[in-house]
Image 1 (spheres, rainbow, N blue to C red):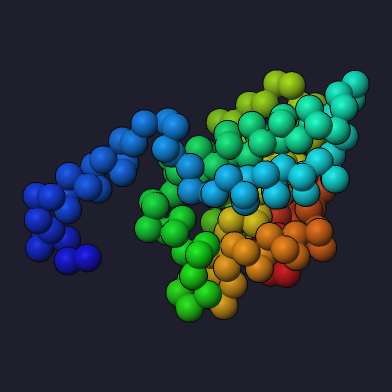
Image 2: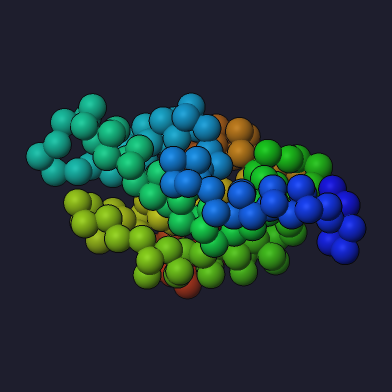
Length: 165
């Protein structure tokens, strides 16, 4: 892509279209990734009175909600770093970002059909995977595969542990 002062009208329009995309196209995770993360969340969180199949569907909706939050609050150019092992952010930036995003998401993303502790866990889990994936030498696929070992901290003071591995 050209430097900012060299953007063509078409490139600028493309940026605007991406920014204002309709809700159905405002996710960065693939269907396979969303379903996989939903199953991984389902292994860690039990929704009372709901069977496992319905829990999977609930967690798909939870992940879509969080993915939309990230789409709204991260430049897509950053969010695309989750697919790259060569490019990415350092540990210090990852710690800062995961702390800030989880706080913002906790305020903006409300999932009334989940108990508060489960909502916080889901938010930390998904954001932790995304930010960890954006680190240098890591990518979404690898981090997602090792997510079973991901420790989700109880306290917000320990949130940075999500990205240090």
